[in-house]
Length: 521
Image 1 (cartoon, rainbow, N blue to C red):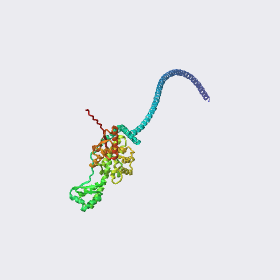
Image 2 (image 1 turned 45 degrees about the vertical axis):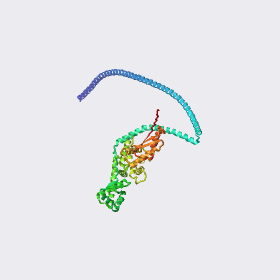
Image 3 (image 1 turned 90 degrees about the vertical axis):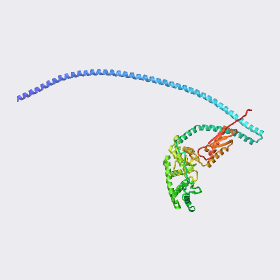
Image 4 (image 1 turned 60 degrees about the horizontal axis):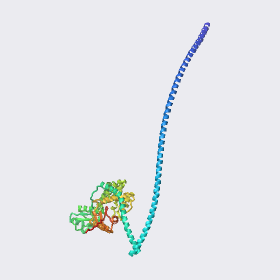
């Protein structure tokens, strides 16, 4: 028991001694670590101090460099600003000089204006004085005329008015020459250019299709069968077709006459079918006439569609297509109206394109401008108004309606397409080979042209040449001077426009020649 206690005590003493030794060792070790930490801290502090000194030096250097750069930029901007200010001062000074110069010029112009106003006032006073003297001279002249000639005041006034009329006629002639020269200088060249472009770009045939109103009969026996017993076949034919059939002594020919070209064509084709068939009696005549009418109506509609397609005018009403097809059998001065309408449509487009207008609308106006001729034998009135009324019921545009109604100048033009249609209509009608007229009508028109010119005072002779497209007038040089000749040409042209109907245009040329002959003896 005691030994156990002793061992325990020895163990405790050993533990205490070990602890004391351990604590001493730890104390010694801690002191050495503290000393090492102090030395390390001192080293870090010295390094930090050195790095801080270097950073401060670098920052000071950068700040000095940035300061120098900013100072240099400031100096540069200051120099540029000073230069701009100097330039602005120079411009301001120059403007001030210009303003001073303008003020001087304005002052000079004001003085000149005041001087001109004074001169004008003086001139007005002089003119007023001269007018007063003219009135006094006129009164004296009238008194002198009354005293010398023994005329009454009314006669003297008439003589004075005649003198003034001659003077005014002379001045009017000079004014006509000046105004026409100024107006034509620009307008004629431009119009000629556009017209020539349109004509050159459209190459139409020079000949036009004529409507045939005669039917060849192969033999006299067939002519007798066409007439029928006591003329019953002819009467049935006229009743079924609505035309007049003229059978005379001319061998091998029967003439079909009607104001309606479509009806005349139906009759012609029906008669040809009867001759080919050989069975000619009233029943057969009515049957073939009805069949021909239906066939021709279909052909007319197809013709209208082809014309609209050729003219490139879409969206036409069926009624308009039918009327266009009927124009194929209508002629004007020998010119086929349908072909004429297609020509006008194309010419309108060409001129509209040159002027910057709507070419599609121009084509539509040109194609429909003569559509009233298809029914002008059935409806009262001129074909322009008839065509306009028809298209108005079919909801055509106002520009198209005005072009149709006004292409002959019957109404005022309210759109630029109406003058285009008028010009294209004249070009198509006036081109060589476009139209023709009978000999009697041709001679009558030439005589009328010469008569219009001969009615004017001072005209010695008048000749219609170039198939009536030019009128040459020879005047008495002793009774008419050059300005009066110019006025006479204008008066004759105006009267021709008002009194005559003609295709295209008529050129009026007034010739005045003064011949003086003396003999040395």
